[in-house]
Length: 275
Figure 1: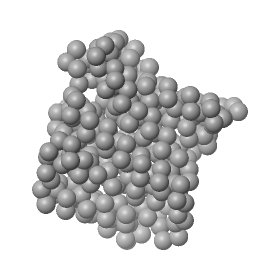
Figure 2: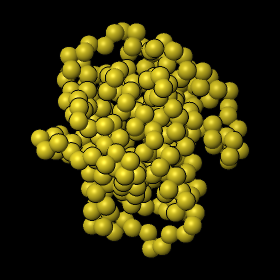
Figure 3: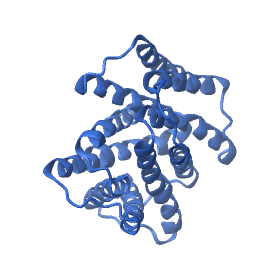
Figure 4: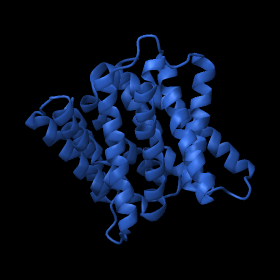
């Protein structure tokens, strides 16, 4: 598969996360994050069947913590405490933060056109999902910002450290998921963020989340990052909230306004300019 198409597919699949979370899952964000990471990681490890090279464990722990432990927990906290539009809008800062981190850590100065394209896309997503009546919770804002920084830094460090040649991409992704999932499972137990019971709808939702919305898209995403660089791939995350918005319109009958349609056009324009 073309690398940019792989990144686009991953970002599109992630757009389904919000509708699954709001319609099929219990309201336990840390628990959801742990099941998502552990389920996806175990599936990939069953396919890859590879251990981590001994000298790479410290780096892999850092990557697993940033890309999954910290990112998933903070993302779901912000999703619980903020309206979906506000939480999604903060996620659009990811491409700009990644470009700045790549400049600082990888000595890759951004072009003016790349910054302009990302700002166009961020404005577009804002028009799509930001509501005038959205409330602001400062804990949620802090969690959203920290989740963006964690995910962006994790992608940059993958570029900086690289993937061990003896590890397949599936194994590389699996162990990061397992590390992050184990951290979240311990945290969920400590703070008591575990549902009293799960029904069949919850079980199906968690399965979809772990397999179709975690294991598959993260393999595609990391494959693109390793080959193209985080700064080139991260703009595709702008597609995720747009997909979530479209699903809301189709499944929940939320009719888009003209301003929201303008936002969709701006997002696609930003991606085209960036590429």
